[in-house]
Amino acid sequence: MDFSKLTTEQRNSATMNIDKCTTLEMVRLINDEDKKVAAAVEKVLPEIAAAVDVIADKLKSGGRLFYIGAGTSGRLGVLDASECPPTFGVNADMVQGMIAGGNIALTCAVEGAEDDKSAAIDDLARKDFSKADVLAGIAASGRTPYVLGGIEYAKKISASTIGISCVENSALAKIVDIAITPITGAEVITGSTRMKAGTATKMVLNMLTTGAMIRLGKVCGNLMVDVHATNDKLRDRAKRIVIAATGCTEEQAVAALKKFNGSAKAAVLSINS
Image (cartoon, rainbow, N blue to C red):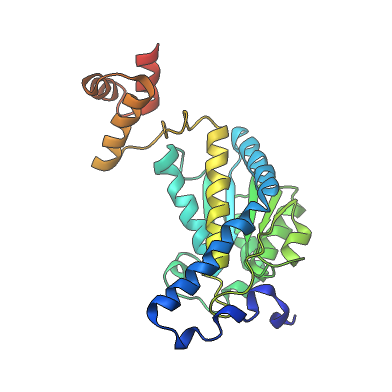
């Protein structure tokens, strides 16, 4: 395909002289472009909401959410998945991130891995991916072969599919059940989709998992009552959650948490019963 026609590969007229700017002017230009990202995401909120509902329904039924991507897109999926267990107290298998080239690609570029469609099928098969699960493909360009291969496989076995991309009429958007397409425009540095496209992607992923976990009852008010308190900061947070949710004293919160092995939700239910 002609990559030069992709929105994410266009030159940004506002930043063509960024190399001649003062440092303050430089970062101001970047900030000005970043301001456009939230507006782009706002335009696709209905699609994000639809995806949240699908994910929540699948997770309630025992299914899993898989992210699949390459490069920055893959790393963002792995990041979002890895934050779910400590934040919401869920099993690490419930939300999983897959990146082209495997775990080594999280810190080192694995050239060519994103062009291998069959690798995605093999990776999903190793995870026993089934129609009970959801596959969310992430590709700023909407044409990454590894991602398309995974989505095609998911559709073949009748699994639910979501596509997250940042270009109009992408190949990914055309084949998924729900297409989430925030159009973030030309990047500050031509083609550097780790910037605006990456920021938009992170915002979307935040909504997908947070929204699904709220629907699963992992949040009370705006408190993460299922937080997995594995360090001093999180243990202190669990205590503050119990106090905020019940109005109890610090001593009562500490005692309840001790009784229920650190479970803020159990402590809250006990005090409020």
